Amino acid sequence: MKITFIGTGAGSSLGLKRVKSSILINDKVLLDLGPGAELRLEDLRIHPKALFITHLHIDHFSGVFDYLVQRKIRQIPELVIYSPKGFSEVLNIYTRIGNNISAKIYESDLPSGKIDEMEIYSIQACHSIYAVSYIISDGNTRVLYTGDTKEPCNAILENIKDVDLIIHETTCVDDCSIWGHTSIKQIFELFSNKRIFATHIPAEIEEKIISLANNKINIAFDGLSLNV
Ligand SMILES: [Zn+2]
Ligand SMILES: [Zn+2]
Image 1 (cartoon, protein in one colour):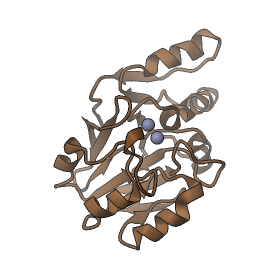
Image 2 (cartoon, helix red, strand yellow):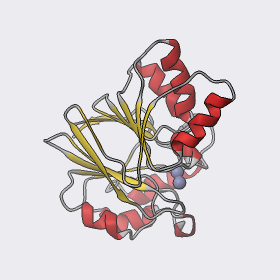
Image 3 (cartoon, protein in one colour):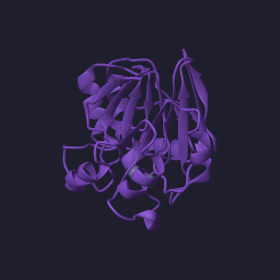
């Protein structure tokens, strides 16, 4: 499975060093598309078939609206979007006020779908608003992407046993559970014996997070691509 980190910043991340959340799987499936990430995606000249959104915080989905404009202009087939409930309401407002954008949308509490060789399903995460984590399997490899969550989150901990790789949000150094997030210290305690990549990192504190990861937790960065 090919994994490309398009955007690895948290909502609080400033500027272009780490744009907001987005991961591309096998060049076909996007997991989240935060602001700025759509520009990095356009630079790759790849047009994924589907987008799976973890939750409706702006740093996880607002890049899609500008990206839909580009797809419309270039007559690229409609993006298929899977999301918790609420996404189409936002898209409808954009179209009602005069934007010519469209997508094929499937909304549900636990979005799931099959895109070519990949099966994608979701479990409920533990965030400050309703959010899901995604498990992606291509027959050879299983990956879990947490999206935003605090830990310990039982649904996630129960599902990591048979995955080959965990992509976990890491938003602070010490304790950010009050905002529904996970710290690098918790990641180290819970997952340092697993194959894991940390993402959703505020650019301003990345040095501290990298030093606490102590080479045991891989820290993702924008543009990183790997085969699992
Ligand atoms: Zn976020
Ligand atoms: Zn969030």
